[in-house]
Image (tube, rainbow, N blue to C red; front, side, top):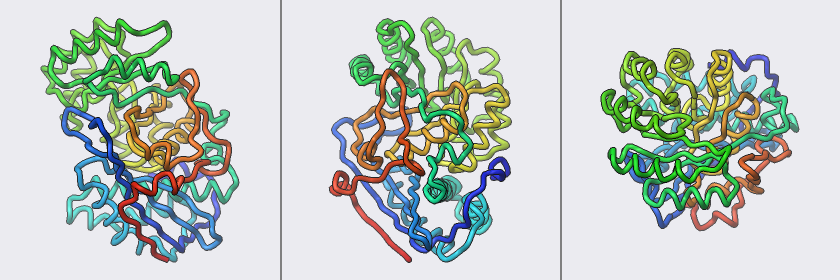
Length: 387
């Protein structure tokens, strides 16, 4: 997983303190997908500190099921904290490679492939933030980025109910690209897509996310109808575990480019998907962390695909995704969930601005942000410190 980052030099890392926090922020309007509903906004944060007092933050994907945050925090506390403490590693990629080997049999025994890889991703992210802070560089610079830390972004997580009003509010907030959730029935999907399409202004972009809602026949039929509208991509039109032949058949006949990647969990699987995906979307809090996702992103760009990091969670993960996109380069867009979530801004302060569809990264070392503890104190459900 880490071969693509072997040239990135970092100091030796020795973790002496592990902190794990679980947050839950209540929301008035649930976030709806074709497979489930989020009735609050959870976040699991991991803070790692080395023997010099330097620290780094990582976030672990935990949106589903409802107990996901507490479960991932338990894995971090009982499995990963003991493996991290008082060990010395030659950088984040080596650390996570060793932790991956140490937990591989456990993963097989428990079949907890997703949760364990999500915890590994959060560890990797926190170690890269720590390494960049020690190097006194923004993370995207440490990772080899050449730009100024400015990335285009799009409004994501737009629910089917009230979608036109949401797009209008996002436009006022500075967004110039929008992604609507579909997979709620043909008539409802087409009506929503038509409304938003008719509202688009010159230069604005429009994407769709089916969240694995359709089978091959349904996807083919829907995409033929959706082709009448100005749609840049359709995300996860099929279940992620469908045979690759189905994905390829759909790509060959689809008038709309396909996008996916949040549920792909290996570099080899990403490479195999380049044959049918135009837009590649690894999630750095769900698989691979910075190490794996940067390698997947660069492989995608080399293959002529567009890298667009997937993300739907709190502020630490969002900033990690933004730094990855700035480091990898290319024409991709940063996904920003626009549903109400105080953990987005509260866990990443000072939160960067969005202006005319552009997200500007902070200029400080590492991620360039810190949780605003006072702002999110009411949402803290549990914390654990060891070391």
